[in-house]
Length: 94
Image (cartoon, rainbow, N blue to C red; front, side, top):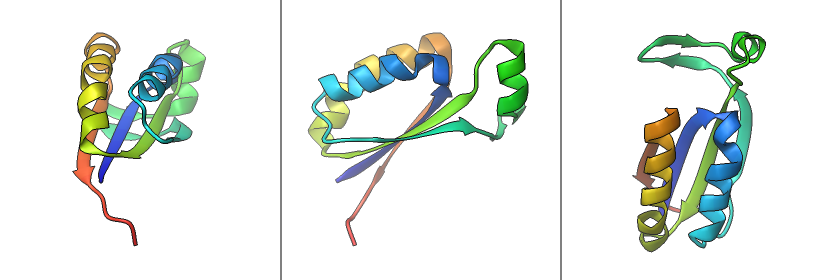
């Protein structure tokens, strides 16, 4: 089993969730208004909302390798154009 973590602008959330469903993932979790620090410095959701850029969100997907492969083109396309990060890791149920 794999774990996909996506952190990107909430403005692109619908596109990403559509891609996840289209790839056949069994489900996902979404956390909105994610803050932290990245390559370009601190990310503060409140200031991003005020500026009109929107807050960040974190999407977690647990699925098989084949689903990850189906997701890669759509997710990479969205991230390349709009920004964000995605990481895949091995996951094991308890």
